[in-house]
Image 1 (cartoon, rainbow, N blue to C red):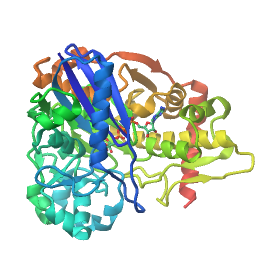
Image 2 (cartoon, helix red, strand yellow):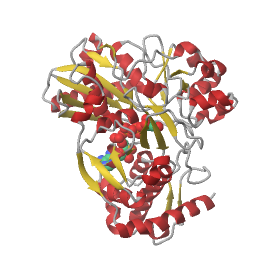
Image 3 (spheres, rainbow, N blue to C red):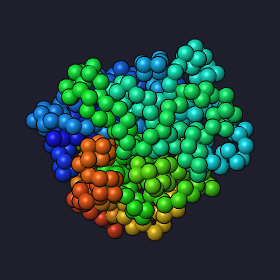
Image 4 (tube, helix red, strand yellow):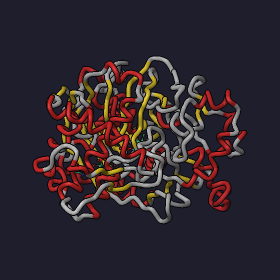
Length: 480
Ligand SMILES: Nc1ncnc2c1ncn2[C@@H]1O[C@H](COP(=O)(O)OP(=O)(O)O)[C@@H](O)[C@H]1O
Ligand SMILES: O=C(CO)[C@@H](O)[C@H](O)COP(=O)(O)O
């Protein structure tokens, strides 16, 4: 008997198979491309998500030696929107969290009442389902008018698997259409924005049984038909569950295509400065504050591809380049940050390029620039001042040289959790609840992966970076 967890990320889908004690039996991963057909647009084709999921599930089953699967759980990238027909068939490519086109309609949000904005409890930024739907309603009337459902990515996947439209609080609360203190869709906001209320599915607990795997989906995935599928959770919330972060206190940095630093909180207290987000956790009990970084793995992957480099070559720059990259500065703001901007947004840049700069400096400066962006976001979290350590998770955090750089630049110890796929693990743990492998979310803490290593900052480099970081901020802000 085994459980499947599927994490539909921005750059790849990850599938893991756990036994009923939470032990890893196998995994599969399939990459896909993020599309940018016009300036500021960021999209993915849901059909590619599905084909990639089929491949990753098959590979995970092979790696796990074909155990009997009894339940499936889901996690997925947050905020964006998939417009579908009645059956869940996508009507156009999915719009993703990094998409900027809805800047053009943010004025609709700005003119909401102060009370309504307070209940949304989050910065008003364009890559969320609410603003994206406002854009679609205005500029793509045909697809908007014919849509039956507006789904989050993992909810689209579940509908494809079960035919049941639903969402959960952790994803719904990250759409800018959710009343955080009231814990329900923000009916008044949806009405004020003139959005169709019927687009939004019922909200079910992340650990609820949302439906059964259809015969057709089961045949494609190679899984048994009619096994239960859990509602699932947003990837950041699922990653917290997957690493055993279930109580307020510890900070966690998840590094994927984007990066997020989160801290669980027992009350829905929003950030008056609007530099951090407030969302529902997967346990249905807590919330979490999150500082988001849009330009993390997304940008490093651009560097890797554009310079035709391997990941090893990029990280090997840490062996030959000194902190500060001999004056070279990389601004990673390829897409506008939601908050915590390094500079007035004009796009990314290499600043102060000189003839002596080699390929290695370009790579090292890119890593430094992304890490400085993470540091700025970290400093916006109220709890960061006191935190001397952070947990580290996510597929973009695995290289040892990069982990050490992050510890040095953030000036914090990084705790490496003994799981490579925290969000997919969180998803599988939710499957275990509907399968009665464990009674509830709290019980999953007993099978939480331990800390496999502590990466402590090198005191000399950390001290150097205090000054280099300040210099970086100053130069970044002077440059536009
Ligand atoms: N082999 C690798 N070594 C180091 N970093 C990688 C590697 N493959 C991908 N990455 C980085 O990880 C990011 C994807 O993180 P991941 O958590 O797997 O994906 P997602 O954002 O889809 O959840 C990529 O954008 C890239 O920057
Ligand atoms: O944008 C956020 C959180 O605000 C992310 O949680 C996205 O959902 C993307 O996650 P990855 O695909 O980068 O892991």
